[in-house]
Image (tube, rainbow, N blue to C red; front, side):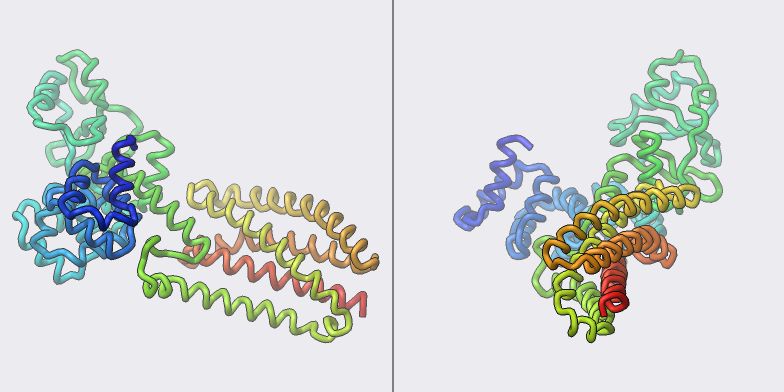
Amino acid sequence: MSLIDQDNLQAILDANSKELSLNQIKNILKSMHSSEIAHALESSPPEQRKLIFSLLETSIEGDVLTELGEEIQQDLVSKISNEELSEAVKELELDEVVDILQNLPEERMKKILSKMSLRDRTRIEGGLIYPDDTAGGLLNTDVLSVRPNHTVEVVTRYLREQKDLPENTDKIFVVSKKDKYLGEVPISKIITSEISEKIDNLITPNIDPILVTENDKDVATNFERNNLISSAVINSNGELLGRITIDDVVDVILEDADQNFLGMAGVAEDTFAPPGRAAKSRVFWLSMNLFTAFIASLSINIFQETLDKIVYLAVLMPIVASMGGVAATQTLTIVLRGLTLGQINRSNIRWLFKRELAVSIVNGIVLSLLVGFITYFWFQNIMLSILISCALIINLISSVFAGVFVPLILRKLNQDPAISGSVVVTTVTDVVGFLSFLGLATLFLI
C-alpha cells in the first residue's frame, strides 16, 4: 500500500473523522481501491461501517462486497435495497455473484434474480445449484474454448477479436462439438507455434480437469501442488462448465486459515461485531469448556481425602495438568496443519504417531528430571519428587494420544477439529494429569 493510500485509510479510520464532511469522505473513497475500502470497512465499528458503505457509488459496491468476509458482507447486503444490490452485482463474475446471493433469504434472492436479464439469471441460477464449498461454488463461466481441428492462425485471430481477455487467462480449453472437455493449451504455446499447427497437437498431456462437485479445499490443494493459475471444471459427463482461477483459490486458503485460527479459541465472529452477536458466537464453547472443567474437578474430588492429608499436592498438581495441555496443543496443531494441507493419510499416520510419541518420551524424561529436582529442593521429599516425575511422563504420553487421535475422530464424525479439538484434548490431559498424580500419591504417600 502506498503512502497516499495509507493516508486515505487513516483518514477514514481516524477517530476524529467526524470532523470531515461527507463530501470529503466520498472523495477519499473514490481515490481508494475496492480492497482498501473493504479493509477500512472491516476495521470499523458497525455504525461507522454503515456510514462508509452508504457513501460508496453503486458501481463499486459490488467489488467491495466481494472483498469482505461473509459475516460483514451479509450484514451490509441486508441494509441495501434489492434494486441497489441488483445494480451493484451486475458487472461481477459469476462466482462472486453466487457468493453474495446464496446467503440471502430465498424470497429476496428470487426478487433480485427477477430484475436481471434472462441470460444473467440463467447463468446465476446454474451457479446457485452448487454448494459454496465445492468447485461449482468457485466456478467462472468466462472461458475461452476452441475446437481441436482449429489452427494456431484461427485461434490467434479469435483471441485478437476479443475486446478483453478474462482475468488470469493463461490457457485455452479444447472442447468437442458437444462441449466435451479434451484438454488445454497454454497461451505461450500458441504464441510460439507455427500458424499452421493444429491445436490438437499442442494439447498439454496429463492435465486433469476439476470435477464440479470436488471439495474446495481439495481444489486449493490441487492448485498449490501443480502451481496452477487456472483450471478447467467439468461435470460428470465430461462437459466443460467453466474454470477456476487462482484469485478464488487464494480466498479459499485465507478463509480456511482464518477459520482454523479462530476455531482454536472457539471464536467465529467479525472483529467489530456487536456485543450481542459476539457473546452469542462464543457462549457455546465457553459452556463446553465449563462442562469439561467440571469433569476435571470431579477427577480431583475423588482424591479429596488425599488432598486433606497432604495439602501441598494441591500446589503441585496444576504443573502436571498444564504441561500435558501445552504438549497436547502442540501435537494438535501439527495434526490440524497436516489435515488442512492434505498431508496426513492412512499410510503415514502411524509414523507421525510414533514420532510424536518419541518426542513426548524424550521431553517427558528431560522435564520430569527438572520438575523432580525442583520439587525435592522445595519440599525435601524424594518420593514426592519421583511421583510427580512419573505423573508428568504419563500425562505427556497421553497428550500424544489426545493430540493425534481426537482431531482424526472428530473429522470422522464430520465435526471441525479446529473448533472442538482444543477443548477435548485439554480435558483429556487435565483429567489424566490429575488422576495420575493424585492416584500415585494416594498409593505411595498415604
